[in-house]
Length: 405
Image (cartoon, one colour):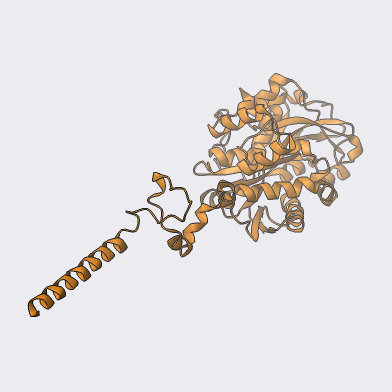
């Protein structure tokens, strides 16, 4: 009897040991065996064997990955973003303030203007970290930022303009292009010169050490007439207003100026000035775009009553651009573009730069920077993004300027 009792205790001990081993092995490798099926449930495919059990999935945030791909890919919209502009008092700051207000009022994104001295102060941060999130820039400066170059080709001998950026900024993207800003050649109202071609051999303000962008505007204007800087007599001035002062004092025959400049209005009041007609030769236009890609010749009606516009006048112009970066989500880019598109009627009276801004100008046939994918999605939905723009986008991403081919 004692012997039988001893055998019974040994059997029980062995059974307990076996149960403990099986239990430990089962807990250490939960994915090694398929989960138990409910009656009538189909067996899971072999590829799901490595997934955690439903109890484990509920306990971990990773379970969100089971949502539909489209929903999982959406990122929440930011509550606030910054929109970079030039300093207060400039056109860019005033226009940027209008854009920020409309975006804030018409979308869930509060948009705040952040003034800078100029794009070189904020573009590197946008490129590197996506801060600031949005910026206002012209199409030519946007190209300089994207490539790190002053112009697509080397400048003429003797013309030295330092690149505004130490290196390219390949992560910047366009959200939208806008109406042009104008930079033409101004002469005295009583001068014999009618077109830019008439300036051959005359005294022209140049140099612009304090504002090198005017070098490019002057070179582009001369190129429209088939002239080079060697066809005129240059007179060094530090910046644009000094050029207009030299015109007032009769030290130059012509000086580059932006349409709407207060100094042009001053010169017009003192001596009477007018903008010269820019030639509209397609071959010459391509030459001008070598200095300022994205520029074109536009008609400025006399009815606009701009200082220096005595008659309907064709003037060199280059578009405004709203810029972001690849750090911005597609959903954010889409939301911002939609806010501006849907509220053009509100924007147009807020600043003269938006007076002629229409749906047609959001997508330009002279893009200088690739568009943001979120903006492209919106434009495709609106039917304004064409197969040609797909080709342009591909070329721009390669660093090419498709409209100059």
